[in-house]
Amino acid sequence: MSLPSVTEMLSQLVASNSISSVNPEHDHGNREVLEFMANWLEPLGFSIEIQPLADSRKANLIATRGEGPGGLVLAGHADTVPCNPELWHQDPFHLEERHGRLYGLGVCDMKGFFPLAIEAARRTAHEPLRQPLIILATADEESSMAGAMALVEAGRPKARYAVIGEPTGRRPVHMHKGIMVERLIIEGASGHSSNPALGRNALESMYKAIGELLDLRRELQDKYNNPLFAVSQPTMNLGCIHGGDNTNRICGDCRLDFELRPLPGMDLAAIQAEIERRVFPLRDSDGVEVRLEHFRVPPFATPDNSELLKLCTQLTQHAPEAVAFATEAPYLADLGMEVVVMGPGNIEQAHQPDEYLDLASVEPSIATLETLIRRLCV
Image 1 (cartoon, helix red, strand yellow):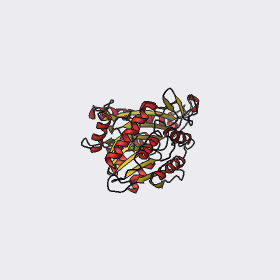
Image 2: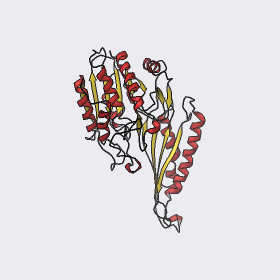
Image 3: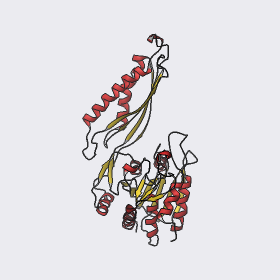
Image 4: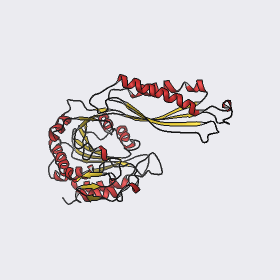
C-alpha cells in the first residue's frame, strides 16, 4: 500500500512540536502528531479512536485492526521533552541524516518507533488477523503520565501483549524502577535578620528536613537491593532548592524538589507515609507550615514466565534487562497485558542535544515488529 517512507513519516513527526512540560511556557499539544498517524493507519484498515484529555490540545490515539480477546499493542508516547535549540547543530524540528544517523528532537525518545511500527503493519496489512493489532500513541508521558492514566481510567485498550518502543537498544526490558517526584514546601515568617525572634527561618527548617530525607535514603538503601539493576539500590536525588530573597532578611519560605527511584516490590504509599512522618513534625517544633506535593510512577516487572518476554528474548538474542528509567509499562500492565519495553535507540541519546537514531537499527527493528505481529496476531 502507498505510504510515505519511514524517514518521510519521521520527518513529519519531528517537525510537529509536541513538547510536554510541567512548565506552561514550554508545554504544547500532541494532536497534530496523532492526525499524521491516523492518516497513515486508516488506509491500512485500522479503525481510529482519538481519546481526548482534559487539556483539549492533547489526546491518545488508539488505532485497531482486527478483533478478538487477545492481540498485540505497539505503544509509545507522542510527546517529547523541551530542548535548547542553541545547543543543537541543526534545527531540532528538522530531521537530518548525517553519518548513518537520523537527527531530530524525539527521533530516539520516541517518535522514531511509530514509523517502524506503521511500516511493520503495512507489510502485514494483506494478511487476515486472528487477534487484533493495536497501535497506541499517548500524551504527556514526559511530564504527567496523563495519557497513560486516562487509559487505565477508561479500561482500554484491551489486549494480551504490549511492546512499548522506548529506546533500549532493541534489547527486551522486563523490569524498571519507579519514580517518586516530590516537592517539599516550608513556609515560615520573614523578618529583620538582626533579631532571629522576629521571624521563623524556613531555610533552617529545610536543613532539618534534608537531614531526615538523607537518613531515610540510607535506610532504604540498606534495606533494598536488586543486583539485576546497574544501580542496585533505590536512589534519592535532591534536585533543586529555592528559598529566601536577601541576606539581611529571615528566609520566609523554602522549596525543595527531589525524587526517589524505588525498586520493584517497594511500597510507594508506605514510603510516602514515611516521608510525611519525618518532615511534618517540623510544624510543631519550628512553628512553620509544611506541605508535600508529589507525583509517582510505579516500578514495573514482567513475570519471568511471560510468553511475550520469551519471544522477544528469542527474536533479539538478548537476555532480559532491568533499567533505571520509568515508562508507561505499569499502566498497561494494570490493563491486564504482558508488557515488554523494547525499541530502537539508546537512552543515552534521549533528552540530549543532537538526539539521534542509528539508521542501521531501522530495518532490524521493523523485522522484529513484523515477526511479533505474525506470531501474535496473524
